[in-house]
Image (cartoon, rainbow, N blue to C red; front, side, top):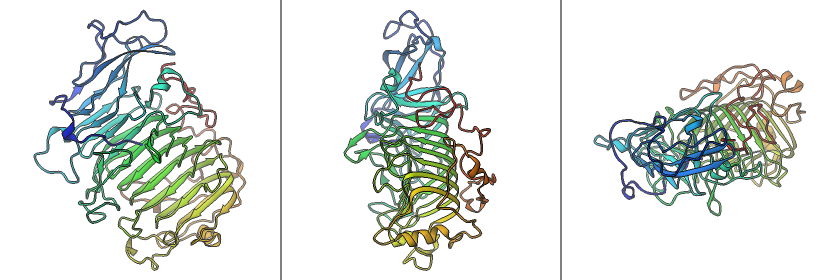
Length: 520
């Protein structure tokens, strides 16, 4: 996930202020920090790093395809900056060394007189490669600042590990660096002090010792745009049970855009959202060691076109949906997902593909789940399966039991018994085509026979009845009524191709291996 800053703003020296700084292609003649060798492959290291305050020369790295120059990013960007890709004969790679902050934290509410370092935009252009120099390295976009990382369908932005840059990774590796964190000022439900759901409710993102605060009272807060990007080999364990994710968000607002995102082999979750809002289309999560999607702290999440494939050797649930420790705190966690294909290849005991708890609201439509070695659905705590009338408090923020419409599952056991929500109660909610928020759903099938080819619909999926998910629309997000179930309609539907990387468990036809160096 995106990680928060490990240092507070007062602990960091400013590398400079001023207008936008643009990193142009490096000039070929400046005196290099390290001699540039004679070209011996596709890539030749640039003579020097781009001229930008705070960026230092990390020297030349030998990669499988030649050489590249490492340019180490500053601990804090205090003015707007653009990271540009460079020609193959003057190649640079950007190193994230330790915590790299985009701006200083601007607090839960905007106040006049804030410094320019609380209104910083980091722009990353298509084709740029960034790597974590050490395990405890991560990029965090602090409140009040933005990231503009927009790759393209054929030239994605890649965040990865040093080992991957060197070509020393495999499909079984993970947890080699931290990840990316986006923090915002939107409402959250869990805070050590303050009133949940208001501007005085803020918290600290997991995985950091200082800084990294999120939350506030600005629904439409904007942490920037990220599109066509990969995050590989993330999830470094700072301590036991305290790992970073590929993509972590905390209190991001409706102004934040995330689209065409791939997580590969995170040692924790593929993505985790703590409160605020998350609107996302076109997401691919491969090989997460914990959950593919984790939602918490009252997040209001909308997602469409999602592929998640877990490794046979590791992995927990595909979805873990929770809420705060006080289950009735507003806002109540509410996740809505349409047109997804989920493949759980492991048979880890008690690792149901979907685990809903903490009074969280879940709504799923046009979803195909294949978990042949495990359970499908586990619902914990009666508050997660209650009706709006049963809610002790916060009934206006309660959708009722989880809503399923056109959900097709093949599992070893479709529904699990829990101490407070038994399998029969889970089955009843699954078979219902309405709850307190939605009605008019179509029947779901817990005894479906999958005919998927990898993650592409087969005969049975193509024949399955779908549902129009537009009743899920909210918070500026519009669900498409596409008339099919699953994430990928057929072999002609290739929205996932070109910007992703391939692996032994998920071949997207992109022709680029996730385990191979980006500079192969």
